[in-house]
Image (cartoon, rainbow, N blue to C red):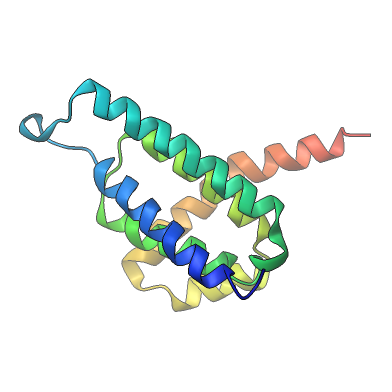
Length: 143
């Protein structure tokens, strides 16, 4: 599985970038028809599911999780996403952040460029506040 992971992630990254590009907030003149918006939202949901699947089959992806997060925040810095698209993609990236250990977070904080680092810190802050605490609460009360 590890041999195919980089090729798969490259293709998956292109898909995520396409959704982010099409899901950016647009002016009135650029607005897509309602049908396109529904299709784009469905794609964002499917990408979220793929992120979840990657996180559950972590054997070949744990090593690459910090790079997946770095790619996402690098693209996120370039666009302002529609809120519904962003929520699905962010939830998926939270699942990838679940795979990251403290060393990965430190690696990202030192290697990301200044503007991208700020986006990452915002993402990680919301991850720590909302997703991580919720997940820890679920684990605490699971028998």
